[in-house]
Structures are given as C-alpha cells and as structure tokens.
Image 1 (cartoon, one colour):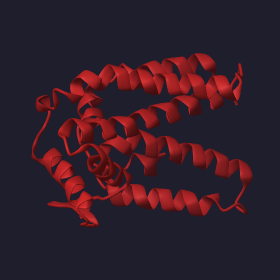
Image 2 (cartoon, rainbow, N blue to C red):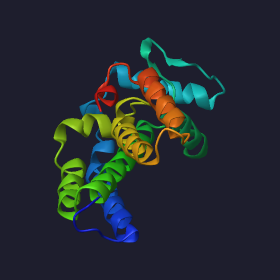
Image 3 (cartoon, helix red, strand yellow):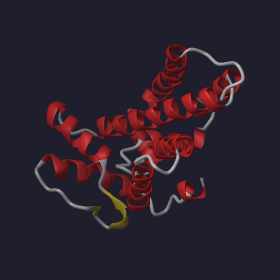
Length: 193
C-alpha cells in the first residue's frame, strides 16, 4: 500500500483530474486528425459506421488481428446520436485513453505513493507525445484501450493475489487477458505483466 495514504475520494479525484487534463490537452488534435489519419484509421472509422447500420462483424476489415470491441460500439452509438464524423470517433478513442490514464494513476496512488501518483498522472496525461496519434485517432478497440486494459489487468491481478485462488477473479482476469489478446495481438504487454 501507499506510504502516505490519501482518502479514496481524493485518490479518484486526482486520478480523474489527470484523465481530464489528458482530454483537454488533446482536444485541439481531434480537429487536426489529418496529421495522422491513414488507411488503417479510416477502416476503424468505417467499421463504426457499419455497426451503426446494423452490421456486427467480429474483426476489422482487412485486419485479422484487430477485433471489434467497446470502442466500436460506443462510437457507433454516438454516431447514431450526433452523426458520423472523424473527430467524434477520435474523441471516443480519447475517452478510453483518458480512462486508462485515470485507472493507472489511481493504481499508483493506492500501491505506491501520492508523489509517484502525481508523477505518473503527469507523465501519462502530458508527457507522451508519441501516443498523440494513438489517443486522438479513431483507432477502434486497439491502441486507445491499451492503457485501460493494462491498468485493469494489473489492478485485478493484485486484487486476485490478495483474495486468493478461491475468488472468481482468476476467471475474470483470464477473460480480460483473452479479450486483450483477441483485440490486440500486436500488443502483448499484458502477458509480460
């Protein structure tokens, strides 16, 4: 546990603050999607449009390693409500990335320290220009969920070890690992964790 514990409310408030900072910093790049937009990203955007029209494929078109997941369905729902647009599908990716920033920052706050939590939140929200492409583009259920899946996997694994093998968490962790492998065969970081 953390060396200088903070209340649960403060912990999640600070973590959500870093998720919000991440969104605010990246909003201008949603409207400059042309900086990174390419054919793979176009497929992710088009898949959400197809889901909106009632098509439910298992994999992305032309990408046998990329499965359909929550980002695709949420994007399709928002397309139905607000109309299809590339910035909107990029915004959904950004929301999932921000959720991962929040989860990983909170994890560090619980298990390390408040100081490490602040550094982690700043690094994840601001200090990763390389991930600009991955958190502001319509990337479907792939890279935009990497931080969320890794944070969720690590948190569940620690909780599972604390509760012991008799809980049902090992089943859920196994399903999460399987989903991650299905949707992200090119990102095997979870298996190393």
